[in-house]
Length: 497
Image 1 (cartoon, rainbow, N blue to C red):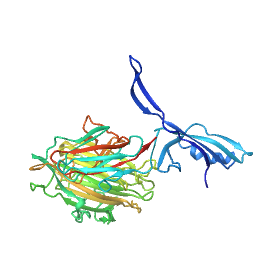
Image 2: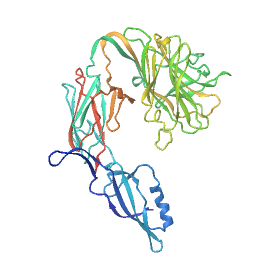
Image 3: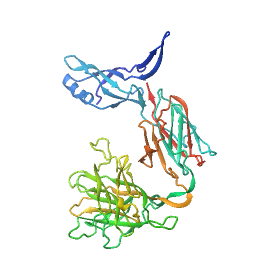
Image 4: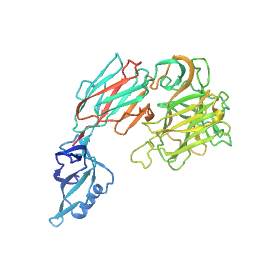
């Protein structure tokens, strides 16, 4: 059933401008700055109900306290972000059998934007959205972008490094920015980082082996380990709980891998970086489970650990915990979260470990430990572990003894292990490894590398900038030693007055 009949719409031709001027000593003024103001859209309507029914029909519109999308049938490819403004005045006709009135919507931004995003990449280069021209001589890229809107727009730029790289310079009409270090060298005699393991080349985690019977969980001996975990669809998942002693509170499976030797033939790392991708999404209230990534020395003594624990058997609450070993092994800190799938309608959306995200990491630099949580690393200092080498990595997924509802989406989907400061002569693993993905969100001033927030790479003096209406040019440069252009994808929405 149609809610109302639209009689008239007043959108206006443009949005009002506010100009700041400076009066000259001579005639006239100079414009200092200009900006668009908010605007209003008025809609005259008729509702074929009495006044009581009219109120019922209009209340869902006027009660919204957040911006809503408003789309008109004569221009279905754009929408206005609006909120009802002021009182809706109505007039009853024919003894209240139908009602006419006017509703006013406030458009805070003063403009509309396209319903769908425009994409420019190698596949559609040369089409209506623009052209990407790579230069294989110096590794730079020239991008001509066609913004068909009537206002500037802030793009998202995705750069996939084909070769190792330490720097990006991005220049446009509206500004410029740098990422990384323009002076980063390709190779010198200096300590370097070496990748020891990457699940991208071992998708079933086959290099991790089931622990032998009787091996104790390095973080918590109350967790039984003679169950099993196995690769299932997206990563390592819980398979069987196994048996537990009377004192144990949970059971599950555990796998272990001794770190491969570095290029010097040495096993163990006092400086280790691990990037991983985790999923923790309960399909129903009261589901429980445990997931751990544990780093130990060669004698299986805990150095550090990153884990998710959901013991709430009635609700949806879980916590992400960070553990450290040393003289007094302990939970360094933890953060509570809800194990939903990050849906926007949730009061506390799980934006850390849902089906489309899940990136996190751990870093040990001598005695300094860092654990990733929501855009930053939580750091602590454990002096007695400065020279202790991480030699093994344990993966544990289990279930609490007194619970029969296991969290149905608990998975280790990816794992990368990088040893830092290996003293050998070789290429320097640069800031952006081959295959790494750098994403720049110009509108929200954010930078991500492999899904992890990396605004620290932003070079001071630059700025996040927009694309003007019409055709404009972006120039992207890299480290001088990298002559292989990256793969580029631009995404933007068009804005209209």
